[in-house]
Amino acid sequence: MMLPLLLLSLAWAPERQQPTAPAEFQLGAVSVTGVSRYTPADVTRLSALKAGQPVRPSDLDNTVKQMSSTGLFASLKYRYVTSGNRLDVTFDIEEPPWAMPVVFDNFVWLRDEELLAAVRPTVPTFDGTLPVNSEVTSYMTGVLQHLLDERQIRGRVEFALHNNQTTGKSQYVFSVKGTGLGVCALRVTGASVIPES
Image (cartoon, rainbow, N blue to C red; front, side, top):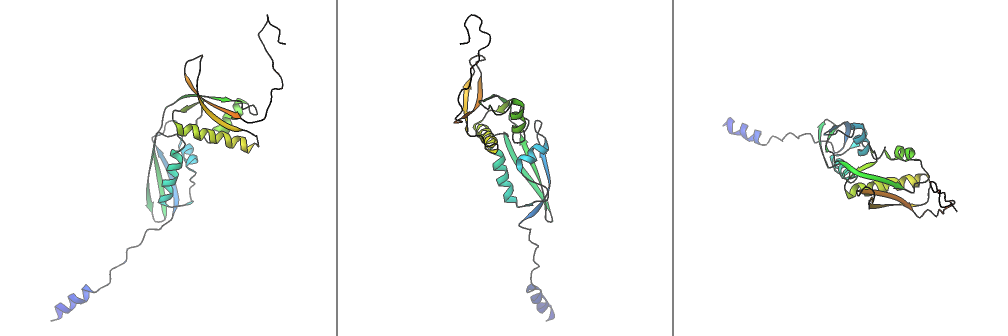
């Protein structure tokens, strides 16, 4: 008679609640695999993630979308592990070839080395070439426009795919339009038969 009563009381025992995972974590380590051109610091800078910041797993989806929109990656995936309220993320990257020559036209306010130094923080390893895709041209146009806006230089950056008649090869040309600048002087060198005037 006691045995059925004992079983009945066990059946009504309340279930133990499982601890719920936190909705927000603290970002721990950011790791990178598959890179040869970029450094892990380059990728972390492009991700805009900083160790110690609050982060949700859904934030990583947005981060990858933003990074992919630059055109600087052929493939970009991520994975993460959590421990308590800490989240460590790893980016698995495939890099595209950088094969398209770049020409900066009419950026008269900056010397070549100044322009390169200003571009490299947001276009890591920029060496005068870019990957071949439409995302990277839009991204570079935005980077250059931001550069002009920061320096309060009037003008808009435009992009064109140009065929170099000398080499017969294509190149990306980024130029500044609408500056309101006029020609102040024209100099001709190397002409001995026809006078400069």
